Length: 309
Ligand code: GLU
Image (cartoon, rainbow, N blue to C red):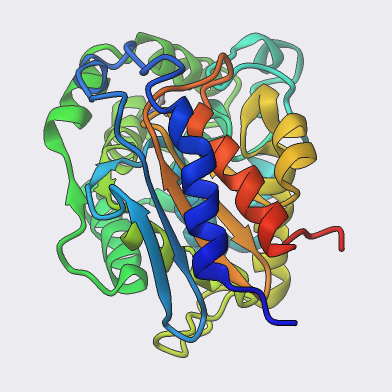
């Protein structure tokens, strides 16, 4: 029996809708604090080009930590397995911006999806280049995947995050002190803050995630962007580490690799099936979109999509 995916998406949207506005909008980045918590959008992209959308699917939002998936793919492509000299691949069980493990683990962050690990990954992606060139590479990669040259950085968000970035600066200096930083702190953070401030809609983000559903091949352009085994490993890391200290709960409830950002977006990958992006700014205590996680749980259940089937 074929599943009516459009209906599954519409149902998931309707089930999650009454929760809209619940959770807490991230306010430690002042430019994010004023986002209306009532936004809620969903988009499902399929490898054959079909799109299904619901709600505010075409409103751009700050993708924040969802960007870490793209920089991980780019860094693996650029420096290969040597990336793992700088960052691990174990769940942290700690908050997204935690510093505690860095002390005992000698400046090597647990994984590329917590802040310290993402900063270390971005540092490796820079690979001796100028920060502006690297941010251009990240943008070009995302624009090509989304099929939309309009994807850009929200400079107000980037500025706001830099202004209030004491915590991320601490993490970066700490890694530097352990010799796990190859560029000046401000060069690496200059790229990191801007990558987090990329603004995308659910429609653009779902399309941009499709290469991870297809073993690293962009189904739109046919390009093999990362090797198949690397795409699978990125998905494995998303599954285990994509939601910080809420990763187990997300895996339990949704059963698919995902990455959340404090802007309220979640990118979820169903290998071989499709890519789903959800956005609603109210966050649970761990920093994952509360409404987004409810919607994804219901969509995955209705569609019968799980990496464990
Ligand atoms: N830009 C955010 C930070 O570094 C990303 C955190 C997130 O989205 O989880 O604090």
